[in-house]
Amino acid sequence: MAMNRLLVVEDESAIAELISINLRHAGFAVTVVGSAEAARAEVDRELPSLVVLDWMLPGQSGAALCRQWRAEARTRDLPVIMLTARAEESDQVHGLEAGADDYLTKPFSPRTLVAHIRAVLRRRAPQVLEDAVQVGPLRLDPGTRRVTCERPEGTVELKVGPTEFKLLHYLMTHPERVHSRGQLLDRVWGDHVFIEERTVDVHVKRLREALTPGGCSTMIETVRGAGYRFVAAHRVLSA
Image 1: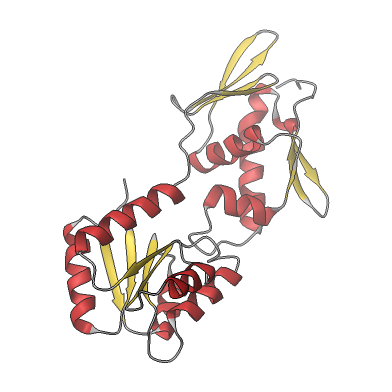
Image 2: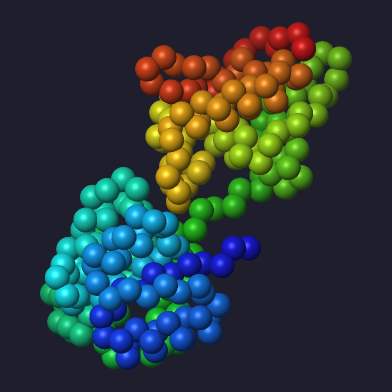
């Protein structure tokens, strides 16, 4: 399992060092920056698993930065825990209204911060779906990583790559809907890296090729100007 990478945005060096030491001891990979500008640059470079964001920063405030991230598609779901020296309830409300997932008032214990981080990551983690999915003749089993297609002459096992497997799983669990390339990027790739939307076309082509030996490639329809749709009703084609 990949280590969760945290970004700590704190301009007080003593506090930043204390936080980073304890988070690394808890098993996280930690990057520390001291301003909103540096935080934006770091997030633009690579999305972290979570941001620990101080309210009071030089220049742009943490609350303003959080609002900015929430307004952008790429960072809309970026988990953020806000830190502040303000204890008033109204300030806590403002922090949450800015889009923070959680809020801690200074001083706090490192153990408390770690507990809050893990709780937010658990809430934001995608569900692991191990149940097999079947649509028409096509069956996908996440537990065994197998894809099969029922044909008149018997069951055909299909060789599907890891990205195509994730793409197929999403399409099969959301049949008959039209999905734009952007939606598929968000749901399948997770939007943790910059990927061109046309990359989706490449993987759809590969997926269709993988489904061809079972005659199930026509289950993925191209909807011109909109995206792709997975259909349940189709005629099994000759391989």
